Length: 143
Image (cartoon, rainbow, N blue to C red; front, side, top):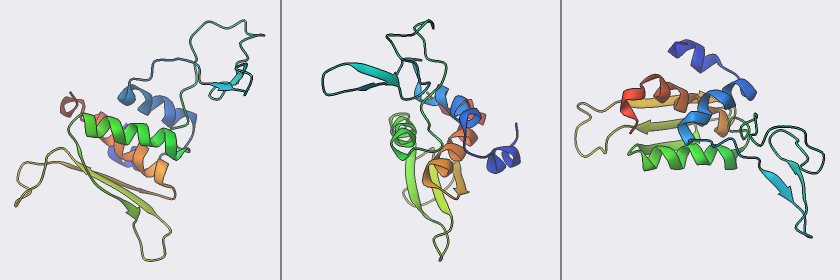
């Protein structure tokens, strides 16, 4: 997959699976807990523990590309890995596009030697995921 493919990629399960390794997704179920401490279903795959015949591992990652809370796990992981988050904002004057921009080094005066990753999308989670995929293409940068 090249840069153009990543920047054209739409939100959905395929993208979620591709960015999941970045946040070290552990394949655990994300059960919806009711007030009586009874788990009803997995938010990711729909598994119901009382009726499940599945293995213990969840095969569906969180919805990183469509849910901002899940996408923020990616932002946190990037910051832990030493990336500098520069901007998450609407990228045009009409607010039609979101832009996520980060760099692999802290900037002081010059931009010499640093590498920027940025992506535009209709939603913030999709912009975050596209930039994350660009970073995963440069795996050497991650710790």
